[in-house]
Every structure is written in structure tokens, then in C-alpha cells.
Length: 149
Ligand code: ATP
Image (tube, rainbow, N blue to C red; front, side):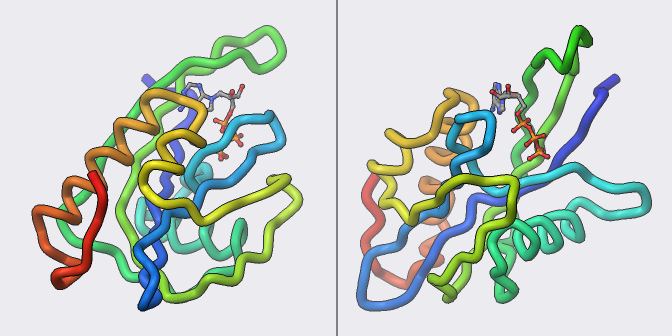
């Protein structure tokens, strides 16, 4: 039913002593969104997440946070064809601040929750971020460090 399915991650940096920040990329289409990419034949969703984050950012050390998986969908026009697309997002942590962009993106930034909400172009991605941030708070995954709602 979907023409394209991608997988990606709400990737956050947890390098003390700074508060956590989320990685948002500037796509060549112009929008700002999380790292993601098409699930290739034979790949699991998580294999795609690891591969895409590595290809798009150079970051290798990611830890998937258990229990978070969210799907969004949208339609866009590719030439004259209407593409029905789904994207599945996981939540992942890294300790690597350094990003090496691929040709697919123009820019990137590590943003606090408020800044990332502002930066993300689409409401469906903002909703994923709100849920991810809430999930981290509830799971107390950050061991007492503050995450702003
Ligand atoms: P991928 O990173 O999955 O390989 P891509 O770089 O080929 O994807 P998209 O990011 O899906 O392409 O962008 C394709 C089109 O869809 C663009 O016109 C973009 O504006 C639009 N688009 C991207 N993300 C969303 C979204 N979350 N909601 C609505 N429209 C979106």
C-alpha cells in the first residue's frame, strides 16, 4: 500500500555535562528532518537505521532505546506521480557530536528540544519528537538529568 517505506531515528546526543540535543538535518529539498532513508530489500528496519545514520552522518556509535517505534505517513509528488510514503522512527542515543554529511544534505545541527521543535519542518515529525522526549522523561533513561518538555 505504500510506494516507499523509510526508517530513521530521533538521534540524541548525551555527552555530559550539556543537556541532551537532537540531530536535525537540512534535506536538499529544503526541509529539516531526522536522519532516515529507504528500507532496502532484505533489510530489517533497524539495519536501515544503522546504515542510514552511518551514511548520512558518519556516526557509528548508536544505541537504540528499547520500546520506542513510531510510524508517520505522507504523500508527495515525484515528477507527476503521487508517492504514498511511510517512515518508521526509532529512538537512539549517541556520544558522537561530530557529523560528516553526505551529498544528500546541506546542513545539520544539534538542537535542544525547544530548538528542534522549531527547526523541524513538518508537524508529523514534531509530534514524533514530542513523543520521543516524553518517552525519555518517562523511562528516566537519562538518569536524573533534565529534559525540557
Ligand atoms: P529518504 O530520506 O526517506 O530517503 P528523501 O530524501 O528521498 O527521503 P523525503 O524526505 O521523503 O525524501 O522528501 C520528499 C518530499 O516529501 C519532499 O517534497 C518533502 O518536502 C516531503 N516531505 C518530507 N518529509 C515530510 C513529512 N514528514 N511530511 C510531509 N511531507 C514531507
